[in-house]
Length: 355
Image (cartoon, rainbow, N blue to C red; front, top):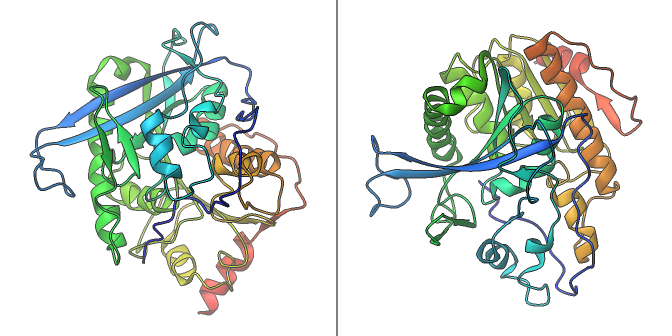
């Protein structure tokens, strides 16, 4: 069963004066742009009236200089759709979020490792902005895919705003993941043959996702050998990963995502991962604590994770960057010893062997 709720909100807020994402931690300024891609080879899986699959992709990248305006977080239509169920939360609140990437800033020369990102089911790609900006500041090209009709709202360049047609009771998670695999492979094809292909080191490609996006990352890797490493941020596996022989990272919220927790899909999929792998949980987190909502919920008066949101993102960013640095760049990036982090890698492997 897919959770259709985007974020848990309390309807008693006023618009805060400051809604800023945390600063990227890398040394490079960040640029951003958006791509509108059309796959004419297949109909849309969710809209029977659409003969083609339309996707939006946000790119973040290391820029030569911090030139240009800061990118908007979401459109007014998207903000209103996200917050629609909560009548006392200002509809335009999320348009006030301050990002750090500069629109159309010139990209740094040379070939860059590529990280494809996929958001949670019903979550917009914007929810991955803190992670995308941070990786770009560390020298990665990041492509966050908006899976049309799987997000609560998607505004296209012509002004259309689509809704989440896939958000129906009892939606099949395996079907969603399969569709996302096709989306991601198409995006990789388009990036490789377009002008961005000159910026991509095709031998160093990874995929990272939150929730359904993390589930899809594993299945996209299994389907496409171009993806050399992956990470799942608190997403159940639907279906179970039968075999994956490349590096994979699991980051989740306890107690559900621990080896003896209630999510059987992590334990079963762990056994099928035969490549380098790591499994950690972060105390004080919840499902949305690994993306921007970690820091956006508190200033809006929205019930959030116990752990400070800035710290939750700092931990996620650090472990994600270190994992990608190691497996895409062969680089050992030290990570601070956070007391909230429990590494289950050894215990999980012993648990799988015993069961």
